[in-house]
Length: 424
Image (cartoon, rainbow, N blue to C red; front, side, top):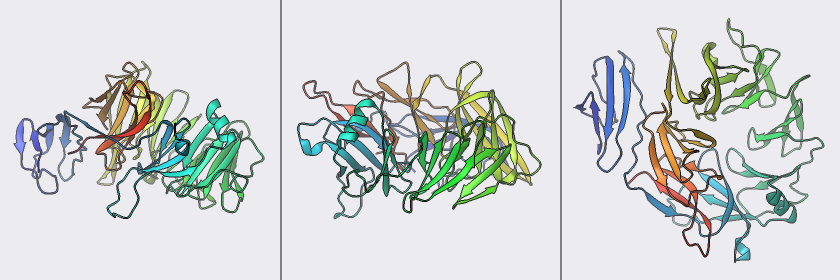
């Protein structure tokens, strides 16, 4: 390997599988180094018969930027799998540049495959008005085959791989007020309307009532392959147009649940919020743990790494480890207080939950990263071109960060998509 590993300052032999074998059980300080990169340090506990998994992300001391677009992007969204971006251009000297575009973020190994942006649509008058008023939203479907366009209460479903404008043929027929909407699958939307939770099939236009609440809005969250919701103190799972109660052995859900949270890449871990506390539920083993008085800011794709605010308004990273050892659940709650005040709208997890990138509200021009435990905070970018009101996105393999930057040319102030490279 081209990196060095130390346990309590003693260099270790690293195998071809990136493991260190035959380590005596105990507590160690693990250090990973690579010439030209920042060091990575973490305290670990090695236990007999168990593999201690760590996710070390080292950042080059000198980062490289690659410009991916040459236009003037107004807003951008990224797909959940980090593989594509969709962006809107409203102002350009070239009229052909104005519109809605799709950009692949993963380069193809096939020479004949076009990697440049694909124009999805021009901007109709309704869309332009919605963008101006801020009442416009783009939501890609899970496999990126469809694109949901929301302009006020008008909802369109476009083909995400070709040119097609929003019109009456792809306008959804909805007679009620839409308060929340997200994709459940490539063909189904989950819509919240006052006290109703509805499954809308975009192909057949069939609508299925999932749940009805007498006195509050739906309490639910989407997991990897399904949707879970709370009703009358019980937990239910909705999948393939069927609702089943989640079987939990010998536990009672907390009273007064106000919200559910789950990572996008799991069906087992669930975070529940009440007015005061957070609770963690490991569904397969009916394991419920009160995490204490804190509020959730964000959750990793695995659902086991949480960014929270405690009762003193400290921002903490909480790592939850649940493992079965001799048929007993082992629970570990490792909380690290971050030295930064994170802006909630500016957090992005690496797909494997190894680290997250974030903005600090005190430093408008900077972007930081921290590993999943909240340690090894590093400044990865300081640029006057940083845009504070637009999202950024880690690459699918975690080796870079896609973000919008403002060009330095003051006579032609343009926003473009860049790749900030972490690897060689």
